[in-house]
Image (tube, rainbow, N blue to C red; front, side, top):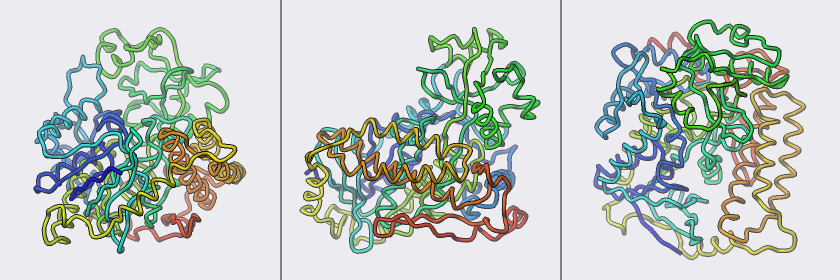
Length: 545
């Protein structure tokens, strides 16, 4: 058993996690950041388009508050949105101080990069932050998969998991920042990193915390759908030269009412566009045509990124379809990034409340920047308040090593009789999620999906890992099944359409019955759903205060 100690443990190494770790390090505390793969590069931050919606000289705090609440359709937590708007500009200055080249644009900030560069903006962002990490005292541990949060005496005491070489690892820590991202990879069609299976949500649920609004999943409308090519989002900066059509040759942009700024439509109406394109793709293939774009524009990002592929994007139209992109639901925090479990803090996509029923474009990175800083500071304050000192002996009150050695043995039980292979089951679960909990949902498919989930749960019981890789795959299966059950169950109960959530059989938004947030809890191993009223302030009150 590998045993480690840290004042602040950060689970996740994307933008939110890195900023939280740097905040802890600046205070003089021991900060340890862990990731399932290489630090930063296995996260969705590395795939980001480098756009931050945040107040600047052209875009006020009131503007930012307004557009975020409009997108959220009444389900945002207003205190968090206000904090996002209030802290956004300062968070951009903090990024600049870390060497991240962000510059002002019309409604926020964007990574400043050479136009000829074909590197993803997210990669440039991560590279800059990794250079700052190298100059810091933050300890980094890639290749650790956390399976459990340690909760003893009513508070967080650390975390338990396995290193990639198979050694069990116990980390004793007084404070934890959960920044493990979303769960987009549970879908057969998604534009996330392959590791984004909802680890953070599952860790919170098993630690006794509720999570909220998991039925609200955002889909991105324009994602590559060509066979044998990776699914990645397509940034479309030249709408006047782009054609979108179906098998009949019908102009879908005209049918969708997109007349001028397609880029803005994707930022503000991606729910409507995703639903419409999904329905169109169910009737036949949908093609994107970039052949009219001039040679000069192909030299610049994002088109020069496509040029790196052997696929002939410039010569012929190609298939596109929506894909899972972002989860609006997650863990509850206050405006300082604190959860209701003492010692646990959270930031980034794993958190619920900022986006409501749908996320406004550009708010994902801003949320990570703002709440990564806040969660890191709050974790520092908690450690300094809770302990008489900050030495290793003051890190943990409990966390029995023997108990977790026994737990490690249980995780690595050898096969008894028939054992299924988790890898094949993972692919089946992804197909199930896309078919039954995709952009368009309805009662029959949701009920059928829940029946399939029950079957998956029984099959998982017959998975006995014979290697560490299979252990991780089994845990991924368990997390995916838990979250998909939540999505299906919450979707079946919510009989309306709102924001990113669309029920074919209940197409209208119903404020009288459904202006409320869904609360998911694990009670004695069973997933239970309750509701809490949404913030009662009217949109006008929210913006003026």
